[in-house]
Structure formats: C-alpha cells, structure tokens
Length: 255
Image (cartoon, rainbow, N blue to C red; front, side, top):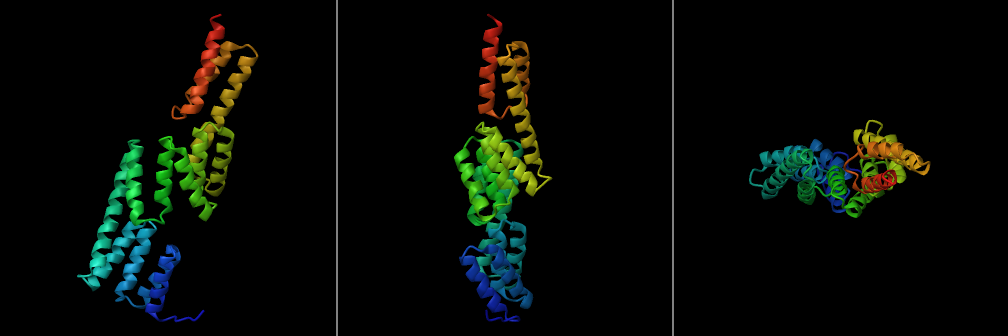
C-alpha cells in the first residue's frame, strides 16, 4: 500500500472509507493520526468525533466536536454532532438510574435511542440485551448477544447474557457453561460470578429435593424445595417447577 506518513488528508480520507465500511475502530486510528499531523484539519476532528460517538464514547466525541467548532464555529455538522453526543450522554445517565430502579423497559428505550447515534457500541447493545432478558424477551436478547459474539467470540458480557437467557428459560446446565466461559474470559465478572453461583445452587437443591422425594422423605424434600425457591426469585420458570414439586410433596404429606 502507498504510504503518506505526513499527509493528514490521506489518513482523513482512509478514515472516511473505513467509516463507510462500518470499521469505526480502525477509522478512529486514522482520524486521530490525521489531526496529530494537522490540528487545524476540521474534517479530521469531525471524523474522530463521529468514530468515538459510533463506538459509544460520547464524552471523547464531544471533545472532538468542540475542537472542530473552535476551528469553525459556524460548522453545522459539528453543531449537530455535538448535540447528538450530548443526547447519548443523557440517555446513558437515565439508563443507569433506571437500571438501578429495575425499570428495564425504560433502559431498553434509552439504549435504542443511544444506538441510533452509536451503532457500533457493544456496551449499549449488551445493556439492552441484559434488560431484554430480565423482561423475558429471550429470543431478542439472544439475538443481540449472538451478533456480538459473531464479531467477538471472547466478549464476556455477551457470553453472560447468553447464559442469563438460558438460565431464565430453565436450561440451567447450558447456562452454567456460558457463565463459566464468561468467567474464563473475565475472572472478575461480578454478574457472571453471581449468576453461576445461583445456577449451580439452584440445580443442586432441586436435584437433592427430587432425590429426597423419590426416597419418600417428603419433609426433607419440602425443605429443600423451599430453600431452592429462596435462591433467585427472578427465575420464574425454574421456580414454577419448584412450586409444583413442593405442592406434590404437600399432597403426599397430607395423605
């Protein structure tokens, strides 16, 4: 490839081409190199900002657009993109608050809006997928996580979400495999660690309860199913089976 090591517009043009191909991370490197070579290169700053924004780094995007406006305060593209970057930061802030409130529908709404400006942001996609899973919209959550894993098979967050969907669909063994894989990629992944622990505990208690029931030890079976029900109130499918099992134990005990 022909190299122009000191030509800012060359790097700027290549950045623009990579952006059109959706390769924003590579484009960002070229855009940054273009403004390093020529700090007055407005289009270079705009492209750098656009790459940052597409990848979900709205604060860095704001800095790039601000620099473009310092160089050309009437630049309408810079003005609009600066507004877009601020909107993304606002959506992030609202989503963070709503996630803590467990208002998962609102988080999905905010992430959908943010992704309109940041289509290559894995972080926003993962947060959306996690909330879809919490809302019981498993096929949608699985689809988002799978798309990310196709591009990055080692993404611990996406592996966690795949596991979460399986966990809530009562496919506990498969879920554990995904949680373990996520922890292999990121040993300090707190959510995967908690989910893995809950999944293993739930599986063990349920199996112990089933064993006690088969052996006719109904009192112990009742206690084990009750303990299992206390592990994760959010796992509706598994808990429904546990309530059913406990009901069967009750009917046996009252005979």
